[in-house]
Image 1: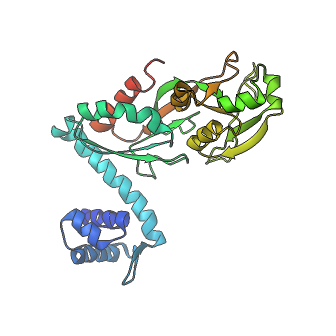
Image 2: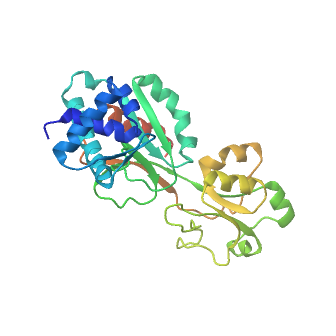
Length: 296
């Protein structure tokens, strides 16, 4: 493809769905952007955008072309970073996707990261749904659980602990469970994974299975909401220790069934194996591995 400028103009327009915004980003007029894209469409022999007087939207062909072109431009930027002497200093925008509760373990360490790497601009997407690191345009993704995509590189952050919690008011009204069999007399607040719709298991039995006869008072797909429901005495909840720690310290929550070991959780940071590890991504990965759950 000879018309690299046309591809750049197309990707900018597709990202913003605005000739004006793309022109501002490229330092040219909206009219110039439109003419460049029209030339690209003529060369390709397809229409990339639906245009009306009020809005611009991608055609089906344009949507597929946008996905490929964005990856190509990312690869070009990585190649420039690899060859440029200046790129040895970490700089530029770094797009990272994390689970919603990720802010609880990430935000405390970010001031130190920014102090060390002031030229790295963090663009953080907090989202509990499973995202595609490549198709989503992310430099890296932080997620918990088992990693099944062999096309990704990964490093572990953690592990972390899970705890069973209840509010003091709930314990005062319904008593404290002392054995797994006692859980049948209580109600639980459960977490549902947004991507799969499955309920998070409570691996409390010796073989890692869930105790039978767990009665559910509430199910939700947001861990912060689960924590709030447990504090509000809806029932007993199963959550990461870093989510519960503030409420435990203040007395808003107490742990129960501490004698039963629970398998630890695991976060990992992943990125495309096909992509050159840029300086900004390399230092972010190294810093997160060093500072997130440092006692593990």
